[in-house]
Length: 240
Image (tube, rainbow, N blue to C red; front, top):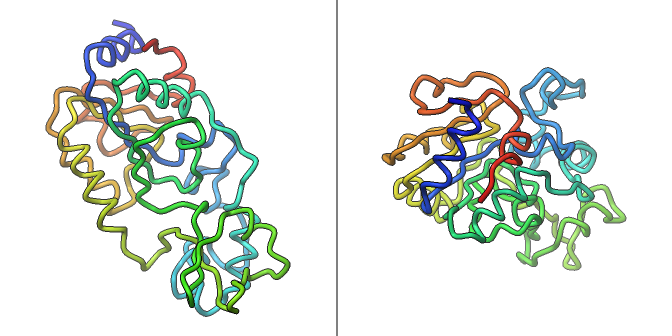
């Protein structure tokens, strides 16, 4: 049977689907991923991206952090693609119960998704480290100083999980609960190599595990359906 037809049958037959997505969900919107040939990890900077996006680096070299962050992470004019829009439609029709995402771009919400667990935080929330006042992404992007400062003089930090930082417990518990209670789990646009996020899929005990990714993943053999293609191109062919 054609794989798109198989996916259509799985989605049509369930109203308890959870979607687990990574960077590949947003690449069709023009946001570079991290680990592909043209991803951020293969571009040249004074420091490797893994180093720049660490808690230690943020605290010690905040200007260098923000030079990279504003240049590469704050893509505020990017629009949701076919994948984001289809998932929002699936939720609206009562088929999709939650989106669990490793992305920090906020495109799921921009497309209309309501139940989104952002495992690695979001660029759209930013807090003063001194008085905890909240700021939006535009304030950070357009701040007159390279390092955005609060009215109180404190440094503003993105609500993004940096290397060396732990995931938010409330978000993790919500994501695990959604995955554990799902009948169908669609994993898409992720290499499934970033932990602890990738480890969450082990909580799935439902009927169908679907994998949509451009490249093979460690979970391919465990999946009921594997489609090696772009997420948006696949989901845009599905009717809900």
